[in-house]
Length: 297
Picture 1 (cartoon, rainbow, N blue to C red):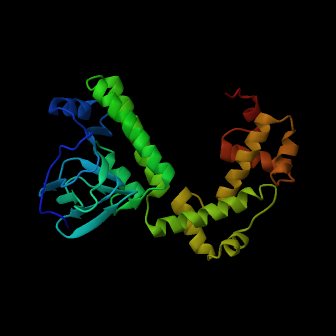
Picture 2: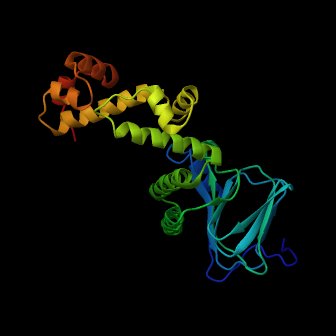
Picture 3: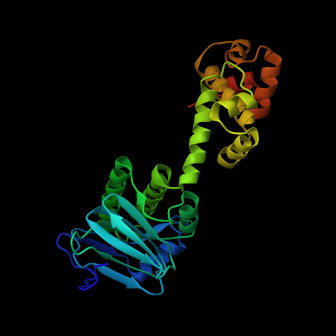
């Protein structure tokens, strides 16, 4: 690690904004921002000798995105993460840490601190606190665009609650978007791929019947493993999920066409219109005719 010369901040063309304590307290109390809000935000380009050390950790969750160059992050004195272009790291609140830029290739970093009741659970949900995350180009562009929008609002309208609420929503969307694009362990992503393959197979056969053995054979998993994955990812076993896809398609046809209920049922694989109507009502809460009669949009 390059630590001979240390410099906490002060870089040409840097951006830096830290909310005053009373504003942080107000945001922590407000029902609109209490779940998630920004307390600190900044951009340090070519941050040579940049160094931070917090032996007791920080009360906020720290996001660091390396847009260029290299650096390092050490957590709890044990685990060191090497940072390079395109990597995002999250330091969970309360974790002792230190970090700094490489001397040879100093990093340029976008960073922000998040506070709020929902932040820790969001990190856990998307697996964002487990190591450096390579961001796909679209996710990286989204991060820098959202950063620019949030920084501008916080700089120009720091004390306006309307601006703070909007920043809170932008940041929640950014975190969940990063999680969807790049979060999760390799095992999580493998499970999601299996479910995605199964759902595509189902969607291609909405006018047909699909059995559990057929679906399991197509994916290459045991029936029990497939049921376990589906319940974990969707909350439903595979065949029940397939039936719900059929009813979703039937609802679209009821809304967008003049097909009879019998024809709609046949189009999603039910030759018995009475069975179709009963199943539709069970899953959608109303009969096909009642559903069609409700104005949409």
